[in-house]
Image (cartoon, rainbow, N blue to C red):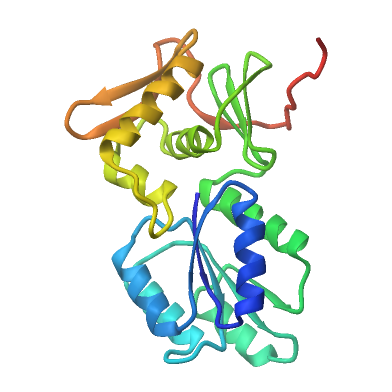
Length: 241
């Protein structure tokens, strides 16, 4: 999961970065509207934009207007002063998906982020099922046939991207864009290593990560298994020994 934060308050931005990185997301930060606009034009793989409206150099509403004018459907959570009702209404009319008035609880913000990402995937709960594989996006836990799979943070991020696009090819460049923050040095060879490690842990029964040679990877099931769906109920791994 890749998130862009556009916020000029350094203290608030630092708190958001630490909180969201703690959930396993790759998070980038810009402090001006012009930087946000440039980042969104350059990187098409952001999964969410957290946008302060009172940005210098380009107002947040203009950043949002230009984003939607380019046809982007990336979810946008706007941050605004508690008394700026007119701006909140304009933000929603311009295509924002949700808003939070400052000051706000980081716990509530994390919950709203999860809700927006679920909505983007067309699901109503935090779990994604792919045959016997279930991934809890909130708890960042993967299970196969009810048994927890021990995955590193990078492997979980990789699995999440592949699950969100199950049945479709995902290029190595797309994986890098979704998994890595600015300044991260991750090569295509490193992606191959992560995929190899993930394969060893999840390719059980019908689950496969197919290589589309020279292009990328595709998460698929062997014939006869149900397609990827959002799980109807939350499933937590058993802690029994």
